[in-house]
Length: 134
Image (tube, rainbow, N blue to C red):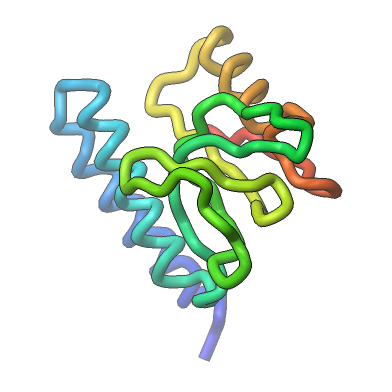
């Protein structure tokens, strides 16, 4: 057994889901479908202790991040102050990571995504946010 072959197969599966979305003409619909595919991927491969959601992160100083497409949080120890399938509010101390997904990226979108992910108010202590283009 070669673990690289397993990872390659998983990667091709996710790429195929993204490729199907190219048929969607509405940018919002395309982005939502890609986010859904990536959330499904994370839910399948991350351990059960991790929750996946979207929304904002709040700090103990009451600072709130920008909107985050995907928030990875401690499902077992995270009080959700505002819980919804479409938008939740996560305490910074319970957040492991955040992802901002972009189907089209220009300099303004990149700046906005980076600001939302890397701002001190939007990340837990010791978390170095990273923007990825998908």
